[in-house]
Structure formats: structure tokens, C-alpha cells
Length: 377
Image 1 (cartoon, one colour):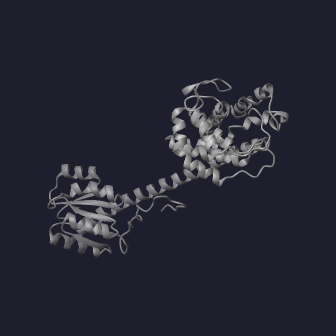
Image 2 (tube, one colour; image 1 turned 30 degrees about the vertical axis):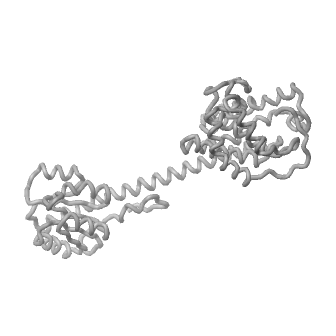
Image 3 (cartoon, helix red, strand yellow; image 1 turned 60 degrees about the vertical axis):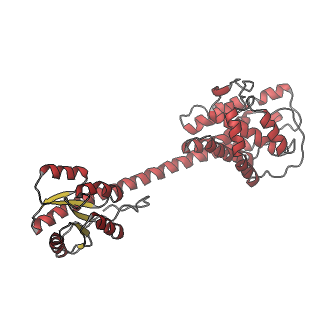
């Protein structure tokens, strides 16, 4: 017997049946339209300690199965209406843990083969002796026990794999969070900003029809979009006043620096984060930076983060300015459809806007004292 830790979806698997003779708790359903046969088989089995139920038809058999914990069914091949063999497949679909043994008055190899192929665990020809019946049942029970234990083992193995995958995922997320924390310490963007961006990206990924794995990757990669600001000089990064044109050109290099920091990994998370860091300032019309990419040449994730970064930056208070009123922010975003932003992503943004507002409200910025506006970011 396999001892399990956490087993998921185990409710459909009954306890493996007892294969030993004598007193046990195995429950058997005898399905035969002849009362004498039902009585004879029941007498054989109860004398060996089996708990028996009987049914003369398919309909009554189903009623017993659905109201009792049945381990084995002795099923007559020839029943009124639906045949016993025709009943095997629905039984396998609804109660795959029940061992099925076919009974027949005709010693027909073709019928026996059909029954086994359909899922029967045994086949016995009438009239049969008590010992032949018990041996057939014990063999079926033994086979079923092995199958059930194998299922439980596979479920335990799957649980372990899922736990290990979760541990790996948590390690990846911790790496991402540490990079995010590092970037937040060196410039005006707060931890709330990067946290919101991850939550925004998750919501947009769902609206975009991304897979669950893509959504999770997007949620963790999006906050690393500005990690390259670590490489920008303090005199520029922390300057409270307007940036000169030369300073602005240097500031734009944070995209390249971020991509270099995140490069060289074959982890999907860091590959996506690298592309976002490099291209979240590209524009749909090709007038962005650093590479001047246009249209679908810009990665899907970078297109999503581009509009979210603008929304959050304008909606949030900074040292050099106050938060822009939402009406003004949304007006600018609407004007950017097809030029700054991909039209489909733009439309999905507005579809997701109610959820984005909730995220913004739940993760507010800390109060900031002064507001001096620079010209470029």
C-alpha cells in the first residue's frame, strides 16, 4: 500500500480492495436476471465474508452502484435490454475503480475476448464451482489493487513534481523581486509602481488571451522594465529639474542597460524581461527607442507594458510633478492609438481599465513633497 502525503483529486479512487480470503469488507454486486443464479452466487460469496448486493437488471444495478460503495461487479453477459458487455464501458467511464467479472452460460472465446477488451477483469462460464468463482474474484481483486496503487503512486509523483515546480517558480520570483528592489532604490519610481505594473500586466495578459504560464511570466517580468536605470548616473537619474537633450539621450540608454543585465539566460522569465526592458519605449509607428521597431516587430509583452507604463507613470505622483487627472491621462492614451500603442492592445487596455483602477487604488503612492517637472524621461 502506498502512503501518500498531499494527494490531489483522489476522491474518485476508492480504497484498494482486500485480496485475502476470509473476513473482509469487499462489497460485491451480482447482476443476473435469473433469481436462482443471484441466490447461488450470493450464498457462495457471503460464506467467504463478502458483502453482497443483487440486481436483476441494468437499471437496478446502476441504482445500487450509485448508492453503495461497490468494489466488484459480477455481471451476466446476457441481460434483458442492454447486454452486460455494453454496460462495461459506461461503468469504466463513471466508476473506473470497480473490478468487473463477466458471467456467461456460453463458453465462447470471442465473447470472452470482447469482454476483456471492453475492460472486464475476469470471465467465468456457468455453471461454475464455488472455488473457481472465488479464485476468479481474487485474481481480479489483485489486479485491481495493483492498478489502484499505481494510480495513487502516479498522483503522489505528480504532487511532488508540482511542489518542485512551485519551489522553482518561487526561486525565480525571488530573483525577480530582488532585481526590482534594486532598481527602485536608485530612482524616483517606487515599489508600489513596479508592483502595480506587474498586477496590471497580469490583468492585461488575461484580457489578451495569454496562457496561464504566459500570464505568470508577464506578471513577474513587467516590473523589471526599468532595471537598467541602475546604470544611469545619479546626476541624471535623480535630477529634480528638466533634463537637457544630452541628458535625455543618456537616460534613454536605460533600456539597453536593462537588456544587458537580463541577457544571457535561457529562463523564459528573464528572456521575456529582457525584451520588455529593451523595447517598452518602442512605438507602434516606429518612432520609439532604442531600436525604432514598429508594429509586430515589437514583442507582445513589450507592447502591453508600454501602455501600462504610460498609464501608471501619468497617474502617479513623482518628485517633479503631481499625478495627472485620469481624464487627461486617458485622453493622451486615446490619442496614441495606432501611433504610440498597438490598436488591439489599446482597446484591451480600455476593456481592462476598471480592473486597473482597482489595482491603482489598492496600491497607492506614498505622499511626496515637491513637484518640479523635468522635460524628458
